[in-house]
Amino acid sequence: RPRVLSGIQPTADSFHFGNYLGALRQWVDLQREHQPFFFIADLHAITVEQDPAVLRERTLRAAAQLLAMGIDPARSAIFVQSQIPQHAQLSWVLQCLTGFGEARRMTQFKDKSAKAGEGAASVGLFTYPILQAADILLYRPHYVPVGEDQRQHLELTRDLAQRFNSRYKKTFRLPEPYILKSTAKITDLQDPTSKMSKSASSPSGIVELLDDPKVSAKKIRSAVTDSGSEVRFDPEEKPGISNLLTIYSSLTDRSIAGLEEEYAGRGYGDFKKDLAEVVVEFVTPFRDRTLELLEDQKQLSSVLEQGRQVATEVAEATLRDVWQRVGFVAPA
Ligand code: TYM
Image 1: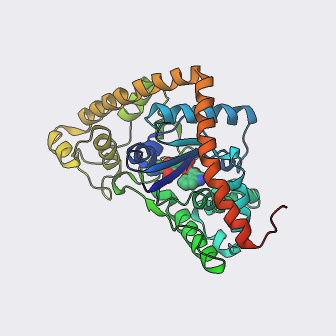
Image 2: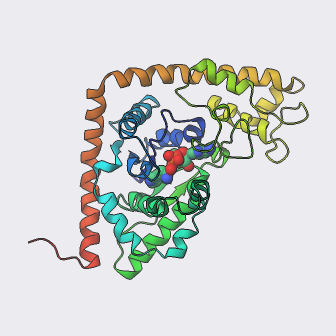
Image 3: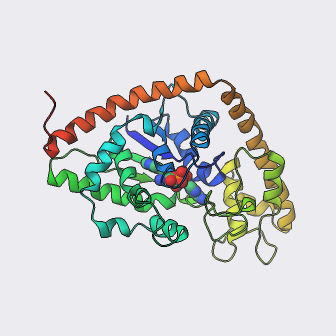
């Protein structure tokens, strides 16, 4: 079975609809026909300042959310990045293959460092995409399900894999991004030309899966819509309504055309009220299930331990090859 791998940062108390529709739903779907490796990217989370107790708590909340949305530990290895030292070790080798200018071209770094202010961004934030390349290449996956914002990091990953393979010996598979066009970029409810983002969106622009469902419903009902009153999918002219149509369509598996037809002549109010109900129906059981899973820390730890063991086996084998090919002397 082809392998899939992906990761998510534990940088908020809850995942949001961008994470879910852009990536996590594909994780759940891909489990069946693939051999999946899914991890919580806590090493990436410390590229910006984190409170230790909060980071630990969020990592476990992330694990509980993955299980609640249907990641099945019997099919998928679910693990915590920092528990597999090979990620950081491979990252060092890849850093030594990356050009400074090449790293500087990463747009996510440019955005985030601009926000932090000149010189204030950490070196870790700069080398972040190279750690991500290591995360991926260690497991030699075929596909990496992510949102559009990760495409450039995937390109860097492929370049580095190719460079290592040609400089040393064929070691890494060139992974393909798996990005669903329809949900690749879910946008901010208050600013529908920008990505919904835990670091950049205002609280009312972002729907968190673990929000009180009443709060989420309210956010949907007060989402910014466009001029006019027609419920029509047109990302250029009607980015607000188009984003809501995308969310509606993917949560209900109904076609956009079918929804346009149903709301023809009915205006935005009705549409948003119905979507708010759809969202409540989705998040309510999800939230209950997550909170229930969080009660049983023993079970969570055992899932993560099982994932750690599966991941370790693969990561150790890859790193052994890499160390040997680079020219490091093996211990006696
Ligand atoms: P992160 O934690 O920011 O986001 C997790 C996933 O959610 C997707 N996503 C979105 N998709 C559509 N619309 C949005 N508004 C939206 N917001 C977020 C992201 O594309 C991502 O797939 N660097 C990664 C974590 C990572 C990783 C990896 C991913 C570390 N190592 C190796 C894949 C493979 C990140 O920060 O994702």
